[in-house]
Each structure stands twice: as C-alpha cells, then as structure tokens.
Length: 356
Image (cartoon, rainbow, N blue to C red; front, side):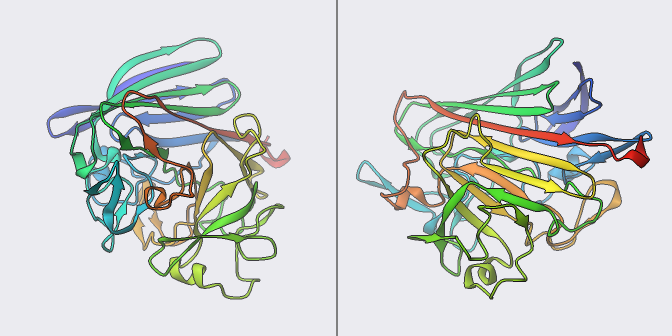
C-alpha cells in the first residue's frame, strides 16, 4: 500500500492536507483533513483510464462555498432534528435551525466544515491508516457537552474503506455521526439506472418537511422496496407523497435487527455498465437513502455540472429526529460513555474484455 501526504490548500490560515492511498489493484483513495472528507475514489477501468466514483469539488477553497456535504463527515447530529430542539434530562435544548426551521447535519458550521487534526498516519503491505481528531466544545451549534471525536480511516488491498467513529462527551448529549459520500458508479450522469438492494422491510414515514411522523412503513411492494435488487428509478410505481416531498428518495431504512451488518452488507449498489459493485456495512440501526434530489446544477469536479440524481448517498445512522421519538433507537450519549460507529464501504469491479 502506497501512501502520500501533501498540502492541498489553506483554510483560515491553516494548512489543509490531502492523504492519498494507492493499493495494488490500482484503486486510489484521497482524503482531506478539511471535514474529514473522502475527496475521491478512483478505479482503474483499463487502458490507462480511471473512474472517480465520488462527486465533489476540485479544490479545497471550493469546499468553503456552500455545497451539499460532498464526502464529508456530518455531525454532531446527522440528519434532521424537528424544530432544532430536543429535551434531555428534563432540559430543553435549542440547536441551530439551518434548513426550513429544522436542524440538519450538524448545523450551519458542522463537522464537515472543520479542520481535523491528523493524529497518525501509517502504511504497511496490506493497508494504510489515517487517524483524525476534532473537539466540539460545549454549546457548539447549541449541543450540550464537549465532545471529543476520533476517526480511524483505513483503506486496504481488498478495496475496503473503513471509518471507525469514536467519541466521548463530558456531559450527556446526543451524537449521530456518518459519512456523506455521493456515489456514481456508472458512465452516465444519472444514478437512476443503478441497481440497489437494502436489507430492510421498513422505513420511517416522513411528513412534507421530511421530518419523521413517528410511524413506520412496510416497504414491500411500494416504491421503497429494495428487499430484492432493482433499479433505483421509481417511475414504474404509483406516485407516493414521500417521494413527492423529497423530489426523489430521501428516506431512512430500518435495518433488520437479526443481521450483523458489520460482516454482511446492509446495502449493495451495482452499475451494470461499468460492472462496479459497492457494498455498505455498518453497526448502526438505520440507513438513509438520498438520490441527490437537490444538486440543482452545482459545479463539480473537472468542470462538470452536477444535476439532480447525479449522485446517490447511502448513509448509515441513527434514525432522523430520534431525540424526539422515544421508540426510536436512542442517540443519547451518556457522560463518559463511548460512542462507536463502524462503517465500511467495499468496491468490487470487473474490467470489461474490450478494456483489457
């Protein structure tokens, strides 16, 4: 495993570094310590050509502009909190309301906009390992407790990207960390022809503001049914209000409790054109499916324009608005207790005969 460390820009006078991992299969992964962002994941598709399966920006300064969390860690709380408020230990907390009167993905200045400290970098024959840390102080974005977060990012010869999320707080708080990579495995701009499978028989119902109602929907036979592999495109199904609300998929799946998704994939995404398979593994109970419904022509890498449905996110997590739904798996992190999230993305590929 080859590892390279370079300066890629500055943010507020501080250097931002890019760590590049290259394995023996020709896969190249780039990570920056700005937002702990997975910047690119390039696959050798033959004849000297590479396919970058991640959406994003070319330069660090472009990530300072408003963008839809390309590739970064989101926290302290991933997804939505209704009205930006929750009650913990009998006290009402008001956190930032950065989207339509609600809290989303850590607020106005969440973890994806912070410079993370590089604690350790090493490589050996089988893998490269990067350790990052960030301290979120008591009151940041309105959250209680000083939260110390450590990420261990590993890329190996099996084409596996593993992110171990560890955190501790000096007060009771809530914590929900995940990665927000936008994937496109195909040769076309749209991801609607990708095939998807999710190991879930239920999803959380949402209202017109994409806030959970507290109810669960059985997905079988509905547009949300990915129990068996099928195309992401929902156009063959009757119109569903939740798809109208989100202008596409923006829904949390309830992963089946009986399965161990650290050893068995919770979701699989496949592109038949490039013969690329993405598998998602997690220790968390939920998985947010988002089909890039609001990319809205944003400028991307290589002078590309990203339109709606040009990228897909598969975000393992606690359920959205879990602090306000006592029957959801709890995202409360008690003082001094460890927070842990195991997240792994694995990419497999076959090179077409004509490209060999």
